Image 1 (cartoon, rainbow, N blue to C red):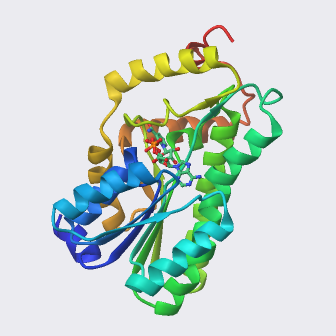
Image 2: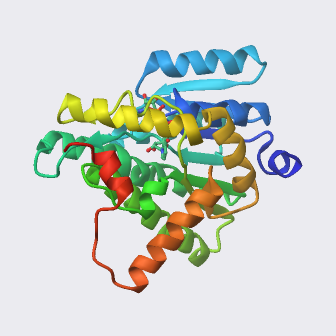
Length: 284
Ligand SMILES: NC(=O)c1ccc[n+]([C@@H]2O[C@H](COP(=O)([O-])OP(=O)(O)OC[C@H]3O[C@@H](n4cnc5c(N)ncnc54)[C@H](O)[C@@H]3O)[C@@H](O)[C@H]2O)c1
């Protein structure tokens, strides 16, 4: 906690998707560290509810209605934050959605929406905020939310999985670019494991029965291994403050997935269905 306060107290935190789940937990945790918190979400009622809790605790919160799939919306967010509160200490590009369906069955508009939120939302978050962070020349943090899914493969979740691989890869390159620039900006990739949030209820399925099955499997998994958004944020913040690149909510699970991925790549193995994929897939 001391390391977290030293890093973040008094700074401005911008969190996309702060109206629910992990983003909500991050916003509440940032406020508890004495940060001024900017909540950027597409759902006004959700982010206002979180902002009300923060304000009731005596901390400062600002809500900015933002659609991360729109570069202009993110540009407006960055401009508003800088005009109102100045330099940003912590940016978490966290907003993300889950889409289910066979690759060829997902309509073009749903493909684009998913990738615009999950991939372009992160890219444009960095494009909009990083120049001002670099110009300020002060210690700052950029964290992008990937997933343990960013280390794996899963049928009927291609849209989500590939977006999380992309966020991980983007974050690796960004960390290197900050080194090239000798910037005091720490870049992290957040790879959450199971966290009980609204993401599976909000999932956009091509077929409702697919979503029903997926929710059931996810609910069972969350019952065993799921943590709350608040607990996820507690785990995430200590790793951000330590400057870690790999930030996770479930270290053993993430390490296990990373080791499996490394072994698969080293062997140049062929993708195969596993008992876990079969269970997630159900009758599809
Ligand atoms: N919950 C998990 O188990 C889990 C696991 C791995 C990764 N993640 C990732 O964590 C991040 C947060 O997910 P969560 O589980 O807290 O989900 P959540 O659905 O509870 O919260 C996501 C928030 O993002 C907002 N949002 C959706 N579209 C948006 C848009 N276009 N612009 C701005 N805001 C938008 C929603 O309104 C919501 O408040 C996502 O990137 C998700 O992929 C979650």
